[in-house]
Image 1 (cartoon, helix red, strand yellow):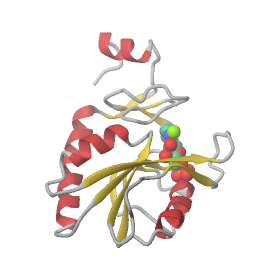
Image 2 (cartoon, helix red, strand yellow):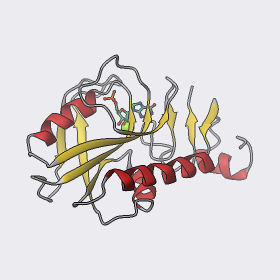
Image 3 (cartoon, protein in one colour):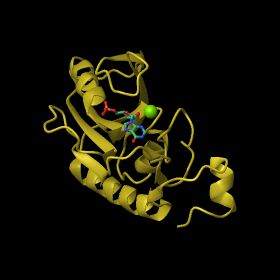
Length: 185
Ligand code: IMP
Ligand code: MG
């Protein structure tokens, strides 16, 4: 895939990225595999796929169409305290699923795990609702932290330690709609 061409330039407003890290075909193939892994991991029982907005919206919509079993979908909106670019580790829920979580099998879908702090706090909040089980599926994992209390059971790709955009991931709310994942730096 190239950076030039009408589509790329018109979608990004002319912004040039350092490189495309995962192109659309590569993402689609891996998401199909993840769907098969998840289908096999949940042989029976109910399944609630819980997407963390906004970053997971494209990944989740592709992923659920590759899961070959009954399931339900809901979303969470979480916000970190503080407006810095560094993850503060303090998380609060802005939108809480109306769905009852107690006793249910939950698959939490996240765009990218960087420090892992967001998920750490979110998992504490969700576990307090006493779900039957809770697992994490992340499209991308930067493997920054030496140890995570709650790590992802399903990971799409190991990610480089660069700032990534596209396929749901943003920089200042831009670039979420790109069909590929690119590195800004
Ligand atoms: P963590 O708490 O450090 O794991 O941060 C996770 C959140 O930070 C993700 O859900 C993203 O919203 C955001 N984030 C981390 N790395 C990137 C990146 O490379 N591009 C876009 N957003 C990112
Ligand atoms: Mg973000």
